[in-house]
Image (cartoon, rainbow, N blue to C red; front, side):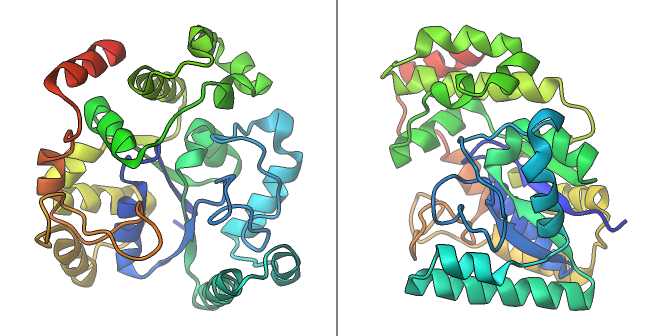
Length: 296
């Protein structure tokens, strides 16, 4: 099986963790969030030569004129050096250009496949499976843990990100139920609505493997062995050792993740079981119960 791999799911559902664990076997080139409309990591024409206009960009056959050839280049590991250099030339951008350009070139030479880690592709997962032949893995997180993680990071969801995409609403008219939340400042209500909307779209999406973040974290060896099989990747002793080390690292803090570097959301080695046990921190019992009710 030589298909590219897409790991998706709403942001803070463990996609970067799962993506990094899938690359532990050495057969994949990791590509981070090409559909993220924020730069970085998105808006990088070297990686994806297409204009992303929305968070959670919906791609279907009716708007794929630009996206299909662009993603064909991405999954074929064809890097666009000059467009990237013209668009992004800060020191950070140049370092990123060198890293991705080299990784793409070496990946082609060694016969590796692309792995797209992109939570912003979650609503388009079916298109990636059907038109690009991706082996699609979708992570779904418990709604209380999901809402708590967004609150800790101070993130907010604006329903206009979905309602402002006519093709998405056309194909999933149930999303019109989100209209009462336009302009809503209630973070738990909007985060719960995003969780419900994603589950609704995924329920109507064939050809993807939906897996629980919590079950994967509780038993990473068994879980990732199954994901390797789904992606057509060989499960090797080396991959297993790397995954065990990455998922059983005791935390220096009670928060399971020790933040470092520029990004607060990228994967760090962790004790994955501890991460599940402490995932709802930041919400009161009443708030957790409310999220349960809103996502029931």
